Image (cartoon, protein in one colour):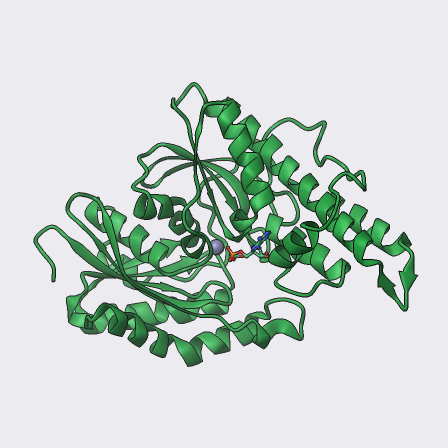
Length: 371
Ligand code: KG4
Ligand code: ZN
């Protein structure tokens, strides 16, 4: 049931390997009800190739999206006629997948008369915490996933200031590559974290990335090279590293990655500290599930009297509820494109949420320099 002033939005997310659809209601008081959150991910599709294969992902979205959308409506007990808008990720991401999701959204909008909202995937991540925790603007966002690593000052809806981003690998990508080097399998992040649980994080001395460089950018390629060199020179029995060496190297890498993330975040906090007080740090993305990283960030926030907010993991990783919510916020604020413009909106492989700081080139990541 829906009352005046409320918005019910269908969200569609297909920018990587998850095929996802969700229904979210934005209440008049600004609160959110997540009515359904359907997702279909099949890591086995890509496992043999050691990473997401864009063509396989695009084909899976074509095959699955209809069913995932139907499931989202079923779980919510709703029909297409109940929605006010359909919001779809229009970029950045793997272009084949983005195309599938955005085209489906256009078809639904056309058939139902619902408003079409093309959503920037990064805006979805940035606004999640307003859906899950009703966080007020402004806040500092540390987004750490397999495709993105950036620090963004979120000042208001559509008002984002990028303070730093990775100049090479994304944080999750570094975990995935480390898992591969250590023979731990995929998905790498959770495997490295559990291997690290039995290891010493001071056994190997790994470099501090960008130690002598000011600003809030990140770099993970040096850590990856250091891990590779240690792994290659480690003693092996039948080709395999000793279990304790693997655990110690996983723990040392995890510690070095967490320390790097915390150090750069501290610089961003210093930059914006005058602007909003008390400060709020929001951490999102798949890597935010890592307990060593979370506890280092939590200690940092405590030392600076900042609040740390981490939305639940299922809304931190890629999902369609965050896309629906970004659409709902834009709809409520009257910040949507007119219908003709929205219908003509072309999918984008690259779509920075905000321009890079003065004098900085765009950063990289597994899916290319997306942001
Ligand atoms: O946000 P996400 O689900 O998808 C995108 O990449 O957009 O993030 C996935 C990434 C993967 O690289 C995965 O290895 C990493 O998040 N990850 C973790 C952990 N759980 C997932 N990294 C470190 N520790 C974890 N516990
Ligand atoms: Zn994402």
